[in-house]
Structure formats: structure tokens, C-alpha cells
Image 1 (cartoon, rainbow, N blue to C red):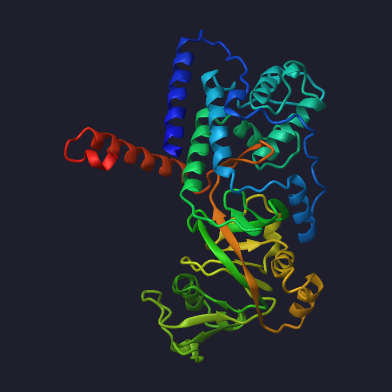
Image 2: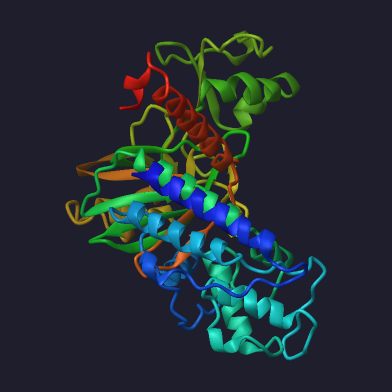
Length: 445
């Protein structure tokens, strides 16, 4: 089904290119509306979200994130909604796309500028501004539309056309369609059992959502893998919560980073509250270890629990083939950054104690937030098993549409969209050729 959608989109794009070639030189395409026939009306022109006051605590940051929307990024209807969004944007492409705003364009509230009408037309095409607002200076109405656009693209809703906002405005409709296609391909290849309660981490958006009864009841900023150490997409089950966890350093980190530190500073392990263990978890002398980094470690490095621990005060167990998990951090200042791709693959969660309390409720009613804080303050390592496992999915969606028909886009931080679509195109070409070959025609059936 998804390949049929992609083929339909491709055909529409060809029509769009033909229309563009027939247009008069220098003509500005007429603003397009999302196709009502495709079942995707333009986003409602509701008041744009108000920029939250500077959030300085984990609780304030998660509350501000939740205030943006209670619509899940990923639920059982996501695939169909992405198809609808792709058809809607294909209709925009057929109508000529949207105008490009000059890279040096400047906009000032209350001051007329040469590109004000161009900006208005750009915002009207994607439904961020009402059609009857096609001309005039950069005023509060346009600023609200810009905020709406910024929220849909994961940008701070300032209402000002920042360089990042201008870059997002000028991304072509063809690229947006490709993002929708790639996101659809991933979703349709996932096998996730949605429950009454589940957790979603959308890697490009760097947010985690706790979903209950089809509504987001908690949303948290997360720090995910660096571009060179990307977080994987996966489905799993959360089985328990660990308070005051120890950290067993992955062998890859022990071989490279830990070994490099020890070569420069033999006292590094002691200062970081780390110990070296043999295959039977018995302590061994760090000075007896080969720290050259040329061999695979035949030992384990484990960091004791405490304020210095890289996992912070909470770890969320979710067994999976990638040995990644969700956890706290001792570098909580990183959650204030807009760019949150800074881990080795695991997902660090802002306000993770709140997530832990949600996971443990309602079956383990004694484990409310106050009880979790009290247990952490003792410094004692404690493992709490969930009586009922909670499904969790880490997804890679750079484009999706929520139930309120808001179409969202994020940057393809790991450059996975084009790679996926190229692979899909190669597969389609192979089966197309196979269908015409007498010896392999059965493969296309």
C-alpha cells in the first residue's frame, strides 16, 4: 500500500514539474491549499502557542513541552495520516509549491518590508496563515502564523523569522514529501503493540511521550545519540526502574575513551569512582590492565552509584538487542539546549523521576514521586520490577501528522531519509525488471 502511495506522489510531482516548466519566466506560483479531497484540510487557524517562560527546572521544561499538544506522535492511525499528508503536499506540488524567500530578507514587527507579502503567501500555502491575510506589513497576525510554523518544525516559537526559521520556510515541497514517504516506510515496517499505556521516543524530535488512553499525559526533552553514534529505532517493553544505578561501561567505550584517559592519567578511574572487574565480577588492579586500546577489553569497567554516575539517579530497563536504555544524567544542564544529539546511543530523559513515577503507577501505588525522591536520597541501589510491562518504541519520524491534522517536520539529523528512499527505489526497479523477465516474473507476484 505504501508503495502505491509513493508512486502516486511521484506522478503528481511529475505533473508539478510540467506545470513549472510551462509557467511564465519569473512568475510566482499561486498559493496552494492542501487538498480537501485527500482528506487533509489545512491546519486550523487557532491561536499559536504562546512562548513559555524560560524553563529552568525539569518540571517546568516537561510542563512546557506537554502544553504544546496532547496528541501522540505515534499511534495506530499515524501511517494513514502520513499518507493523507503526503497526498495533501503532493497537491501543493501540483499547484506549484510555495515561493522562496530571499536568504537576506529581513522582517521587523510593525515595519513594512519588500518581502512581507511573499512571507504571507508562503505561510498561506501550508495553512499557517488564513487566506484573507495575503497582504500587509509584518504584524502580530503574521507573527502568530510564524509561531505556528515554528512549533510545527520544532523551532522555538518566537514569532521572528530567525535564520533557522527562514531555512525551514525555504525547504522545498518535494523534500517535505520525501520526508513523509520515508517516515511512512519506517512506520509500515514496524511491529509495535500499542497498549493502554505506552512510551514513544521520536529521535529527530528529541522528545519522549508517555501515552495513556490515546493522549500524551507526559512529555520530556531527551538527549539521543550523536550523529556518529546514532540511537537505534526499536520496539521493546519497559520491565523495571532502577534507582541509584551503577553503570557498566560498554566495552567499546572502555576500549577507546576509558583507555585513552588511563594512558594520560592513571588516577582517572579512582577519581571517577570506577572499578575494574574480571569475568567473575572480582575487582582487579587497574595497573595490571593493558590500556593500549589495541585489544578488545577482557575486563569490565563499572562506575559506582552516586552523584558522579553517568546514568544519574534513575535507569529504565527495557531489554533489547541494542543494549540501550533510558536514563537520568549527571549533566542535566544539557537539557536546556535546543540541539540534543549528544549521547552514545542511549536516551537521557529530562525529569526522568516523573517518568519513573508514571511507569510505576497505578500497580505500585506506593511509588509516587515523593517516595522515589526519598529512596534516591538514601543512596541505596534499588531495582523495582513493573508488574505489568509497558511497551516502548524509539521511532525515527522526520514528518508526521497528529490527529488534529497538524503536520510536523523535523531535521533528518542522521541523513536516513534519502538513504531509505534510494534503497526503496532500487528495490522497486528490481521488481519492475523482474516482472518483465520470463525467468523471474514470479518474484513480482
